[in-house]
Picture 1 (tube, rainbow, N blue to C red):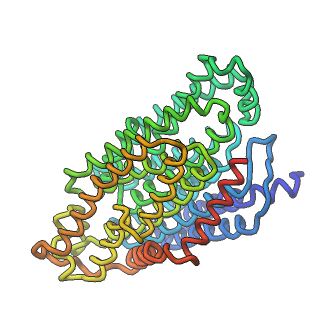
Picture 2 (picture 1 turned 90 degrees about the horizontal axis):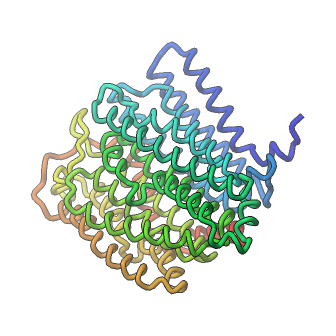
Picture 3 (picture 1 turned 45 degrees about the horizontal axis):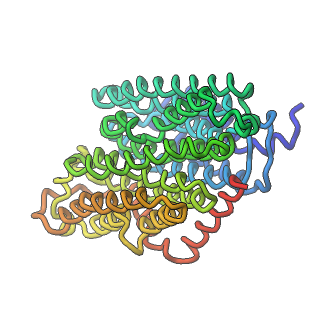
Length: 483
């Protein structure tokens, strides 16, 4: 018999796993394709809600399966963010997938399986657990990227993500095997103890293993120079899938990176900090400059997401509890803004045809002022204009970086933020000052609700009830990781 205390710790993962299996059976034995897809999608959202309730009911810190799986304040905070991101992206799929005639039950099941992998990644306290969670997430994401099988761009997106994802997984596994060879264990705690030995400071094997593991994770968070799959996959995949890619999986990969650096290799922080600083600078710079010439809004948001990963890494580079807290705050705000932005993209429709060019937004303020205002709020927030949430996200990662003495990195971050503001404000200019293009069709309900909620959160973050609570929760979560 499995100990009840173990079941309590892994209950959210069990709910998602059993829910995915049950919904797969329901879908297989249902006769009507689209009706089954609609029903299973709603049930998948209910499964995510049930898992969220189970997480809220957990407390304290516990490890199971020989220390390979951990549950604490850090994991609970990020799991809630992942579940919210997954649920909102599922909510946005109905109308878009129905028009494309791909509203099938397999998609929500795959999203649940990917989410299960993400929850495992967040709780991984062992290299084997890390890899299991990562692969479970990745295998499901390879399929959903190419879910629109009749579309060449979607198939291409899935293939590119699969090839580069397999490469990154191989690198990560190779790095993990080197760390195991050097330290004699896959457990983070044992690796951390071994890394503290004086002779490990100059151990080449430890450095090589560390580099390969970080490169594998950098692929998953789309940090430069391991970002090459991102623009094509974001543009080619169906928009609800792109929204999912941009949010939850990045949170899980960043959580994995945070726990690995803070729990497994804190003794060699001087080594991994150099890598993180390079990834941060390269991501912020490329995200700022490469998006300037983009005309497709999904590609622009892809480069934007690369830049935001660079900003989030600022907090990790500081290597302090305050920096870790800043990363968590940044990730939560990033998910809210990104899901809202892609909900806006889903509202860019003329008849049955979805458009993606920035020029299609011309004069939107004169044809749909509410839509234009919400998108403008999100763009201002992405740019870091106070007092919107995006400004505070950057505030909470820049501050610990400055306190840690990373002045050149902080200056580069500020410059990148100013340059990046150009392409966000360009969208606002197109909507409010250009001659109107053909009006969009009436907005569909669910994406409108999602983008409205995102805008409200972005504006209301300055209120203590919203921002204050989130900051307190992130600080508590960070303290659970960084003792």
